[in-house]
Image 1 (cartoon, rainbow, N blue to C red):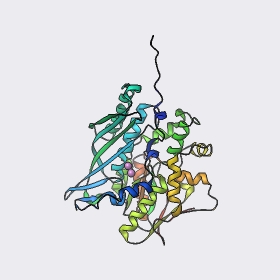
Image 2: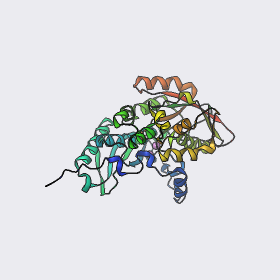
Image 3: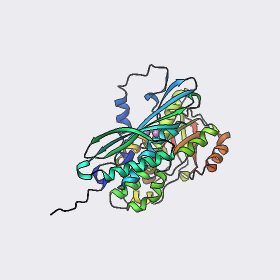
Image 4: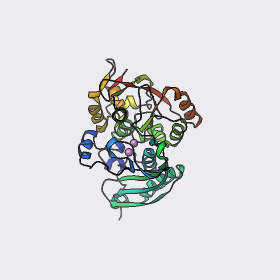
Amino acid sequence: MTTAVTPAPLTSLSATAGCAAKIAQVDLIAALAHLPPAADPRLLIGAATGDDAAVFRLTEDLALIETVDIFTPIVDNAYDYGRIAAANALSDIYAMGGRPISALSFVAWPVESHGTDMLGQVFRGAAEVCAQAGIVIGGGHSIVDKEPKFGLFVTGLCHPERIVANSGARPGDVLVLTKAIGTGILTTAVKRGKLLESDLSAAIASMTTLNAAACEAMVEVGVHACTDVTGFGLLGHLGNLLRASSAQWGKALGARIDVASVPVLDLAMDALIDGACPGGTRRNLAFAAPNVRFSADLSESMQLLLADAQTSGGLLIAVPPERLDALLGALAHRDVAVRAVIGEVLRTDDVGEIAVV
Ligand code: CO
Ligand code: CO
């Protein structure tokens, strides 16, 4: 007699999900200090500025952009997991103002307990999103592992002078965000049985949406700086952008965030109050907090939400004020649904100071 055994849901196989499984910023900075400084002048952007991708100059007018993103299951639906992982990996190319040209996959999979049908669905989802980006997965690498992991190495191209780094922000720049936040909290709420995966439809739609259109819009208009909001949360990635920009400009830059204008996914606040906070989100807030001044009436929940570890989040763009209307128009023209003006970059006393009002 044989009994059909239902394999354990994908998200139950890992302690943390999606980009919330990222190594904490403080630990990563300590480990990366062991990397030798980049000496090759062709490496236009290396590990030093914590940018979204490495940029390597091939010729006078052509640069290669390289990035990799791999994470544990963020949803139980294997097809959605593949779609989200692909959109998330591609995002770092778009955050640099580049266009993707090809990808390789990496997979770790519990073949014995879960077989390969589900894995096939992961690949189908990833391939669909890659097709939307105009690329194919050209190969990859696999290992057997109890904890599933999936992601892509993505290669892109860009003109060396049109790279949108995270270091170009200047005082007065307006900050625009192109997706709502809260995916870390919502997916954690499902994992803890406080919400159903069917409650995630808006979050999944957001996480599977490519940042391609937002990228095209910002490149067309010309902006100062960009990064995408992922595992370190809005405050963490904004902090990185401000530190990198301060270093390049040679003077301290900070920002003011208008909390009422930050777009938040439905149910995220309720789920947070109900106790669905990812560990990565708490670590993010602890890391960011020394540089952030929260207005006195801001709840701890709202502080956590601003630090929520995102997976496949939107682009955070620093645009000079005289080009703001052009950017908002270009985003609208390409049907980018979220185009929130959330604050501005300021000259401050200390590097990376953020005032949340
Ligand atoms: Co990124
Ligand atoms: Co990344």
